[in-house]
Image (tube, rainbow, N blue to C red; front, side, top):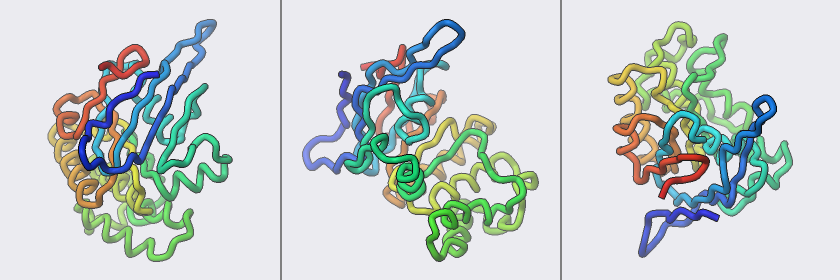
Length: 234
């Protein structure tokens, strides 16, 4: 088992996420490709982690497995001491909606909904009150207070990703997962968006886990973990 030090000493913040011996393989034709090979790590509350590595190194697979979106072949993931893959499908869905936020490269906004409605959606699913007011506040924080009623097709790529970031925060999650959040943006827009995201998660004391191939962006984090051959490189 390969355990990565959390990078803190002394008065350590509590561990928010712990993964132990994660294995994940995919079948391609007659071959089986092992993407995660017994990977383990611990992440502390409010820590900002960047997962780096070459294409095919397993960054996105690790992210999805940590986020509860892709079940490992073996191993475990605990968030706040709860074993994610021991929960039923219904319990997992509820837990993810309440505790976890996601930002993806392709935004995944619903095209028929306005920016405000897209941001409100997770709160409606959760059944919590005050979602509209909270969504308006978040869209203001990401600089889109004048775009509330615009649909995704009426927004630039950077604006769509800002909507996606606001949506990821609507239920006040403890952990935010982001998979190449600037991958579809030019370098200037991507840099501005990442600075905004880092500001928001720091201000709101969120744990952030980001997949990126951009070493400059990765340098903004508390730690960079480089993946190679299904393992975290020491």
